[in-house]
Image 1 (cartoon, chains in turn purple, cyan):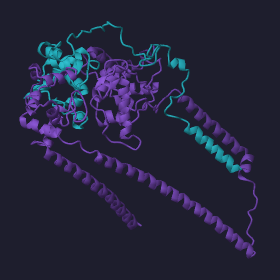
Image 2: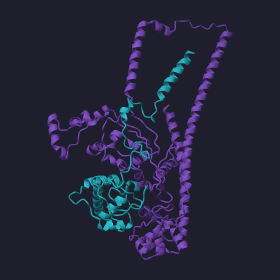
Image 3: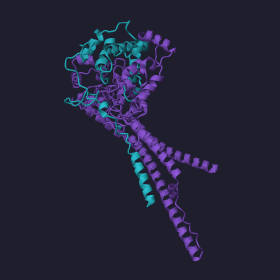
Image 4: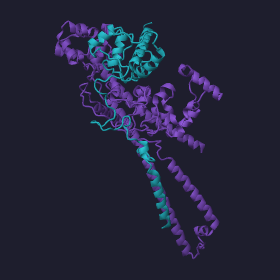
Length: 445
Length: 183
């Protein structure tokens, strides 16, 4: 038995290796294609190392420029060729522009002034530290041909087929099992029938089952059992009715669909953005603010597509659509890189909502007490769709107030009252409850 | 027949159990005690655009607000860079608080050391973040404040996430990071 298990395992791993090999081969092929492309283009380009250029480009230029897309500054693919073809400007002009664009504009250079005005008078930062070699490398990088989108297509293709094949194989197994069971049932029925036929053919009397009083009738006639059952049912139904009434008004697990699918997992989890980056008013106000769209646009001006992990449910196109929804709501024209002024508010669905007869203040908990957001909101950084983690009942609030020690250190404002309270309760660590955290009027007024 | 009844009972029970949806809020006892007539923060309201969050009346100034006169232009940036000085003096500078705020709002791109290697840069989401000791930019307190207030190039404005005093605390911390980097 054990041996067969082992052989099964070996078989499995062999299969997995095969799959990996196949994917590896595809990857190597696509890599080869890229390298080939890179070499053919770099041969036609000038002296300069595109790989070094890419690093320099990403470190210095990518804040405002991309190769194929207008950002704060113009798209830069084949900029040198385009400049020499269209404007008759040579590499020296580029050197001068990069090192001191403001000086070039002031000197009255026609094209420099034209570009400056075209981009709304956004002055390009001077890069005097970039040497001729650095700039040659960057230009070599910009002169590269646009990489064929083939490799990514291949990658997504394999992923899709892989997930598909998994689904199909599961369905096949289930179907086969169902057919097997049906065959088995049919076989048993047929066997039973033939055996009976044999028996009657050979004149064997089959013992008939004697009629007895059915079990439920015997049960009904037994009054003691009926009483016990009745009591049991009454208690059980009381338990369930009580449970049902107790959960009214509690929205634990509430997980509404939002107008824009904002994944906290990607933002707070994968990218590690602090909660308070977007919910900045949690630090200073009663409400933990829903960020206005300008906060989204702080990053999404530059991040216009999704390049992270995808699942079958949430593909790259799905996430890209969400970014487009954001652009529509914020009134951002991605092609022109400016606001159209035509914005629409987003109707977010509120999840955590205390009844109006409860006072709750975020800043008091976040800034003064230093409570982690996750204490009440749960592992938001792992939630693809946010749900309510805590029950938000009074018992839940009070439980935390009873067990949480207040940080009284370095809090000069409260030093005296803390000392007096510690003396009163004979403890050196005060809980929120001992400071009045259970007073009705603190939250209900 | 009997088994049919059993199946129906089980089916009804299962349907009743599976009806609990997480995408809709639960029932409430006496909803008008939960939701008062007053407007809720970020709720709907009877304004022309239907939202409670309205801009303040034009010309109104929040308590403690100091207007910032320098414009959001290249000239304004140069003006701030050369003339604007910090509103908090050396005794009011709280580097600890500055660091906390910096790590929340700036570190994600600029890196917690200010070298332009924040998590978003390392993951290649946002590129081209300069280090604070970049010679071509030669940032000063005034230019940092101007940039936080209005944003610059791809960077957006952080005026609504940080109050004036908090901005100056962040400026002080950025200058400290710059001097650390230049060492």
